[in-house]
Image 1 (tube, rainbow, N blue to C red):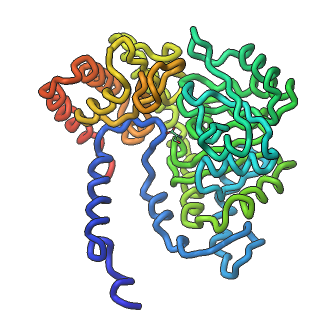
Image 2 (tube, rainbow, N blue to C red):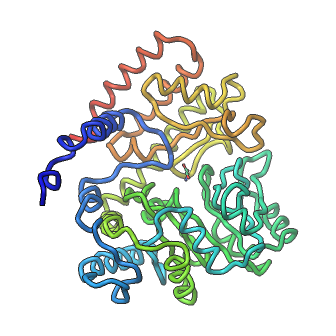
Image 3 (cartoon, helix red, strand yellow):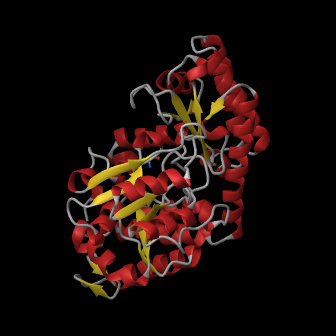
Amino acid sequence: MDDLFYASLKDVDRDVFDAVSSEEVRQEGINLIASESLTSKAVREACASVMTNKYAEGYPRKRYYGGCENVDVVEELAIERAKKIFGAEHVNVQPHSGTQANLAVYLAVLQPGDKILSMELSHGGHLSHGYKINESGKIYRGEFYTVNKESGMLDYNEVLARAKEVKPKIIVCGYSAYPRTVPFKEFGEIAEEVGAYLMADIAHIAGLIGANVHPSPVAYADFITTTTHKTLMGPRGAMIMCKEEYAKDIDRAVFPGTQGGPFMNVIAAKAVCFKENLTQKRRNMNAQIVKNAKSLANKLTTIGFNLVSGGTDNHLMLADLTNKNLTGKDAEAALQAAGITLNKNTVPYDKQSPFVTSGVRIGTPCVTVRGMNEGDMDKIATWISDVIENPSDENMRSKIKSEVAELCAKYPVYK
Ligand code: DSN
């Protein structure tokens, strides 16, 4: 081995080392991005392990490469633990991302041109649910349902009527920006009535489901996909769960259908995060994520914010800023300048473009993981309000920025 092989990142590549160090500092700020979380040291150790070196096309004990005895152990552990968390019959832990997982399900059961019925993107859906600029909408035909205009919530009769009109091959439920409980049972009934498969994309709420603070789709959905890096607090990646009768089709659709070699270091980290999710500590944490979201939503409502659907049942809320005369884009920038990171987001029936938007999405996973509680949510709500009501007041922003730093110092992420 040469010297380069043993040298540390700091010595080999100062540019990358500095960017990583700055990212560590940035992550000590307030992060309200609903789709992000923080990984444990153990998860990060597995991610950075020597398993990154191993090719393992195939599945445990049926590989196309020699030397897979150790990676087989971690893949089997990941599968077994995921089954335990969710009570699923079959699990595939190889998908590299949520979009890859969704595409594999479509490949397993759809033919080109078949119809996917899912939530309209601007109402909280996802690109990979049949949207036309994504492969899912190029190969298959995306048709969409919406939330009810008055309530901002899903309406069973409206979705059923749309399903009867579209006659889809698959219905997708589970969202990126829906603050309410997903009615999986009702979706199961609708899918049965129109003879469609049901796929639940639980990426955002998987940790909440594992902790029993959101109902599970397992009894109703044919296929369940999720990323592992949101409320599950695992590495960036995904998995698919399904009934045993679809196991072979799903496995074939992942490999060799849509992917080659699995990322075995990431699968090792998935196994670790699933073990963590089986503990009472993680269940409590997911319950606290929901409590904090409710608390933040209540405070924001009290001080004059319009939340889509009037509040939240899960880890996120959508604030409609139309009454504040500020776009989501400008609110995101103003809050960032005050040390608060979140993302602009369309609200249902938005008149602004997806790049500008009328709203912001606010999520509580990251602040909860580091230990913040309901009292801290009150402070965060007040800062959000002060910044949004005074978007060009730089003095106010810098005052808030130091208060934010003070609160964050009480809850360090990387000790
Ligand atoms: N899952 C999306 C989000 O909610 O941020 C990104 O694809």
